[in-house]
Image (cartoon, rainbow, N blue to C red; front, side, top):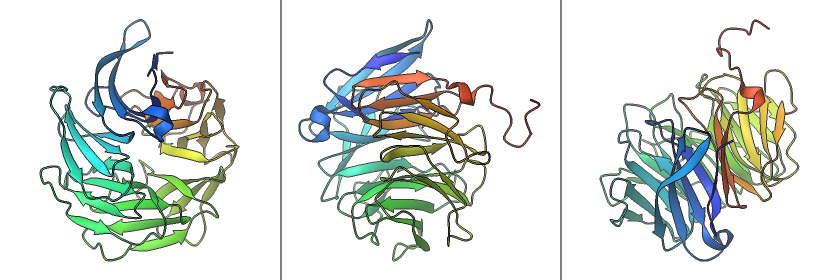
Length: 325
């Protein structure tokens, strides 16, 4: 299993490149994100099961999330504890990044739109707002108000242009049209706890999942949000990040403050198919490799980044064709 140590830096977010399947970006913070600076690591999976550093660059505050551009293989955007976003060109790591500064508190989430009709960035902040950015402009295009507590995550729909979801410490899941920032198009009390993460199903434009601080994952159908369409159990503590598989309709993964990464099939059981415990601290970052079926990466506060293929994800059959087992 390829593993990389981020010395004296604690992992918050990890993402595979959408262009180069062996490339990984990892956002980290010093002193568990409570003080100090941050480091963006660019890593690469190499033959003989290795994970090596290609480049790294420093920021003056902790880095809490990272996302790759969907149009340029050399562009990465990070979110930081000083309320800013940083746009990096990894071909020129010695140059200072372009910065976007409007949030008044920590930016905890950043996402780049995946539909061809638009190329915008979302940022979600502890100042209770979400902002929409054009990476070519210094000022934000819109600010979305509606959450009463800090916003942990905002994620673009991979299917519907201008549509995104957000989750917050106020326990709600909200779905927005970015062209109408005045209010969300729908809202639901998703958990009786803080909601730390959300993600859209890659095969059904109506399904998304939320992860709560009580350890539950809930699935929602935006056509009728009166009650969840599934609920997955298993995490002993907060679900820090939840991700749907890009290779199977009903598979999803989550990382937790209980030091684990877990895999579920929401169509077969409420219990996890597999529990991986190879971290000794909170696990914060999680991502599927879109180009390598069954491969995921995670990172945690123990300063470790792992790239691996859980048994429960291999072999991966077509999401639309039943397995021949």
